[in-house]
Image 1 (tube, one colour):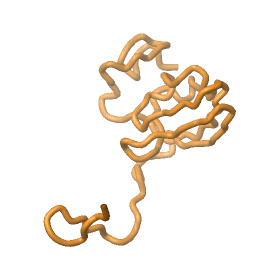
Image 2 (cartoon, rainbow, N blue to C red):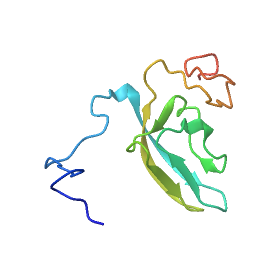
Image 3 (cartoon, rainbow, N blue to C red):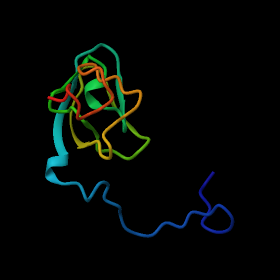
Image 4 (cartoon, rainbow, N blue to C red):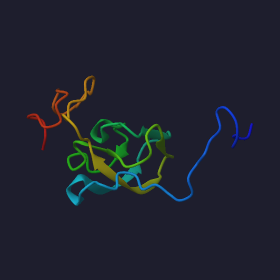
Length: 117
C-alpha cells in the first residue's frame, strides 16, 4: 500500500536530506574494516556495542570499544561469509552506561570503566 500524502496518517516529508549524527566530533567517529570469517551470514544492529558482535566478524575490537555503527536507528548491516566492508562507527554518548550490555572484556555495563582499553 502506498503512503498517503493527504488525510489522517499522511506523510508530509520536507524535500532534502538529513545528515545523521552531524554534530559528532572527529574523536567520536572511527572507520573500521569488518570481515566475516565465518561460514554463515552475520548481522549487526544499529545499537550493538561493536566489540560484542559475533566472534566470526573480524575487526579491531579494542579500537571499537564504546562505539556502535553510524547507521539509522533500527537498521542493521549484514555480512555474508567472506564479505569485507568498511563502515563508520560513532561513540556511544550520554552516561555511557548500557544496562544489560555484556562487555565480554570488562564484565561491566559502564563503557568508561576498568575494561576500557
